[in-house]
Length: 246
Length: 112
Ligand SMILES: [Zn+2]
Ligand SMILES: [Zn+2]
Image (cartoon, rainbow over all chains, first blue to last red; front, side, top):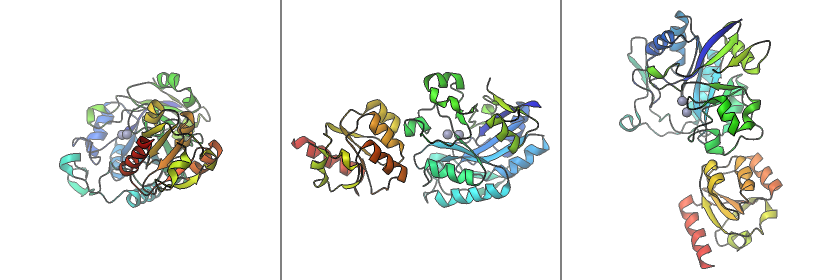
């Protein structure tokens, strides 16, 4: 088995807050430069850039965790990842169906564009992606798991859009595959104030919105090889797989 | 003033937590961020929110809230209703939005 460097929380230009330089090509070349083995593509409430990044990254030997950063009804940000195109497509339908019909104003919120490998715009998302979907935290978790996905509440230490800011405390029956802390802290630091998180696998990512951010925080996975199944095992700590946050 | 004294006046529907209806009201608090309620709400206050997640009961119980008013006719999750009955914190429902129900409650409490 081997150590693999993973940054599982990266936005693309499709997120309104994502820098225009966050094209699939640039993300993959930046990830290569930073020595990442695994990247997670997590735009706000959309998975539409995953497929192309997955293809481009595979050519460079980088494994992609395909998913989204969902904003639940309570405005909690959660990462959801899926193993195959079929599940990803069903999750995209879930997002499309539950995102309100409120349109983006690019001048106010930023562009929401999908681009191809030559940086040509191929699609523009009209609905405002930073809105909350109409499904609750638990409904989002249940749907993610029904698609065999991995569910990770994002940046739980933040004063905005986190479990703690929105819901005050960890829900008693929380069914999460891991919890994420942001660059601003470490799992140990945050667990010292909130010991109740100690039962959960804790990961740390960059939440990159521009290329320079990619890989500025990461989690090391000890795996046979980078794959969805192996990453799931590592989060559970099964069969010698494990995660390390430096 | 007790919770029972504001029900008719504010046209509130009782969803659950009937055993807490005789709770004494000391004031009100308005917020949709549960972390803010944990930090700032005071014992005996009526809490007005649009959140329906089960954690509103955990937070309400932690802060000894006298009742929770859920605005705009939002329907709380089943788990929230169950927990409200266990903790005896009344969950009340209004069709009004936060601004209007808060104004009415404020006026009512001023009259005391
Ligand atoms: Zn976020
Ligand atoms: Zn993010």
